[in-house]
Image (cartoon, rainbow, N blue to C red):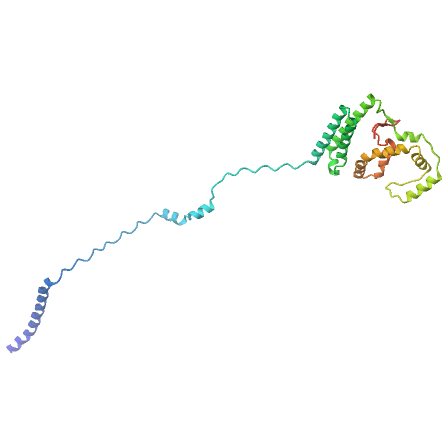
Amino acid sequence: MGITKNHLWGAPLALLLAGVGCHSSQKAAAPNLPPQSNPPTITAAASPKPRPVAKAKTAVNAKPATETKATTPERVSVPAPAPPAPKPDPVGQLITQAEREYQAGQDNYKAGQTDAAKQSFDRAFNLIMASPPEVRSDERVQRELDRLLDGVNGLQLEDADTSAEQKSEPAPIDEANDVTFPVDPNIKAQAEAEIKATHSDLPLMLTDPVVGYINYFSSRGRATLENSLIRGGRYREAIENILKDEGVPPELIYLAQAESGFHPLALSRVGARGM
């Protein structure tokens, strides 16, 4: 019985001793191992400090430099544009040209060059008469025309009083009224044929007095008619333009021709002077 107990305790004891021995042997062998180096100390990297919220918003809202430069160009001083040139005034230009010719006529007249003066006066009147209707109807042009006419007529009156060469001449209409010509049947027949082939805005009536005037201007008064036609060539176009603009028949030009012969010094018995 005693053997049995000793035997039972022996097994655990043997195991215990075996474990102690193994542990001792490990301790004994430990000095022969190379020393182990300590593991490196790991230091946590310092986290960046958070930026203020305002700076973060600024960084987010900031635009690239190129974009800012494109949207905000540099200010360059640009000179103010020159004012537009004034529109040309055809009325003012016409008056200036006519006045220049009129003054040239005045100078020539004072220098005794009557022919040159007349040419300058004619050019002044022709400039106005040949201008477009919308220009000629302007009040400024009408005032200028009246002024030129008064000036030229004043010179003609003065010259008529001081010069024996340019005295007033009797109006052709007065001379024709003093003459009575018989009716020539041949002239009347020829006039009737011409009237049928003539277009006129005025009614053409062939009466005996008309045939008498035709007879007069075909014979004795022929020179008077020819001179009036020559002088009328200077003013015909201008007068016809005025008659057209006024809406009256252009044949009225022959009324001026019959009364004055387009002579600037013609003086009728009733005191009508000039053309």
